[in-house]
Length: 129
Image (cartoon, rainbow, N blue to C red; front, side, top):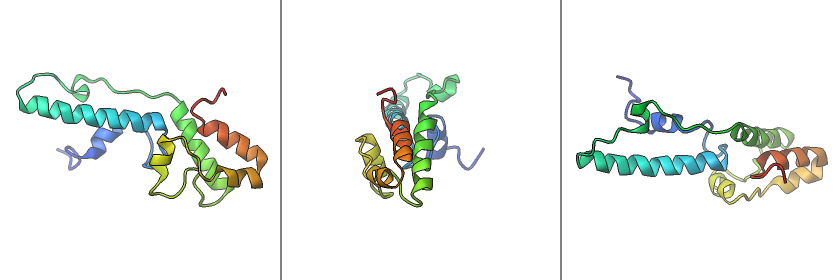
């Protein structure tokens, strides 16, 4: 048995890629939904329910390539403006990502208009807009 068998590490690795503050909003929403369903499932299992968990049935949640594009857009921003994340400081990133509030992207527009256009499109919830 792995020392991670009962940790959040295993649960989060089933729902999508990325590190905290770098995940696309759809991954964070999926993580939130899955965490709620896991808590509900644990309660059901304690009551004697025989419903298997998604990991027990072998199914996994899949996410599209757009989550990689979103994360890469954040990385590009940090490369073009070293150390500056488009969604702010570490303690506000997830909230700003969920609110679609790129608080630092204006800084990129000033230094690199082409980089701004690229990153803006990469972190946009609707890249076709």
